Image 1 (cartoon, rainbow over the protein chains, first blue to last red):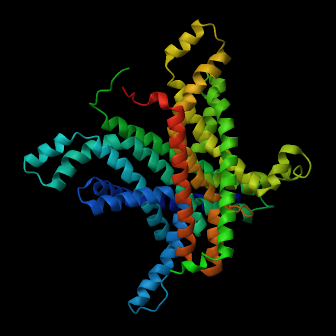
Image 2: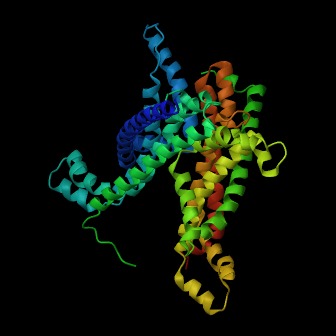
Image 3: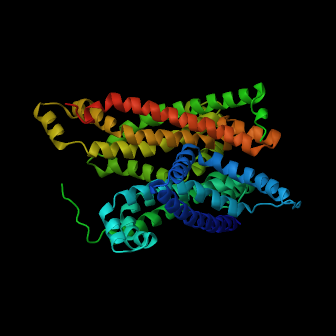
Length: 234
Length: 237
């Protein structure tokens, strides 16, 4: 039965990874969009990108999550009602958690990507345009491949913070690792000695494995992308 | 939107109490975590692996796991141990675990301490070796070199990164609302939400307060940098 609890926590770990990876995809897309908006020459787009990255980074994740999760629920139903749809629609907490975390970390990715794009010499993109390449083509074949190397350190940091923030979805009631560890701790009190501490420490250990593996993989990736870059020796 | 619910004396008092709770938590964590981080950062850069190792392990574990889990480990895990509970009525350090606020401050302080140790240790390592050699040549002892040469400059150079850490800490204090009996801005918003079922109004108000606090902190740190890092600014001729 002791194993049963550990197994259920491991099962929750799977959900945590799914939320993290899904949120990462959302964050990368929003980050690229945000960075492009902030670097564009249209004033409204620059403002929009600026407002997004400033406000989101100035408010705690938990508050944003509660706002989007509870508020989104009501907002969606009000919206549907105005279209004459009267059934109560419940937002899937998995999707809500994933989108919320992605939305938050998109703001951090915006800043990381913006810095990386700015670090690429302007002349390269201009040369591409002079050769008659379209703007998207310049972005995808000239800017993006070089951006990866410059964005990787910031990206690694953002990913490590993102994966840890998935623990917050347990507050929304999603049965992730943290939620299940807390439940197991409460359920096994008296049967397993020091159950709350034991199960929560187990969840912490799994997170530690996640972050360690991420660090190793991303370091390899960084090596791969810095091949051929000369480092100045001090 | 029904923001008139927020602008009633009762609701505003609730947010005001929450603001005080958040500030209390933040200041306690900065004092405890900041103080603790200085000796640990010095240990972190020690030549001896026996001194360096344990501090590395501490920061690695704390920085590699979610703060929420750390809060739960302290509040639901350690504070619920029979061994602790047998002592928390009488013996000094364990008395604290009876108090939810103490548990929250302990968890947040250890967390911010781990991040600050790495920032400060990095700055100490970056100290210009010539400065230390000059101090040695002047006959200063190791303690004097640390106190007079290395720490004053390393702490200044940590300031910009530390301002980010303090803002992260402010945001982290919102997790205090997951511990019963600790009241902060997020806790106030959650109670307004459950009383009136108005999520937008309740959480947007909390968000605005956090934004104002964030900008205030950014401003404070700008002033602090102007004061203590003035020597690194480009010189005017």
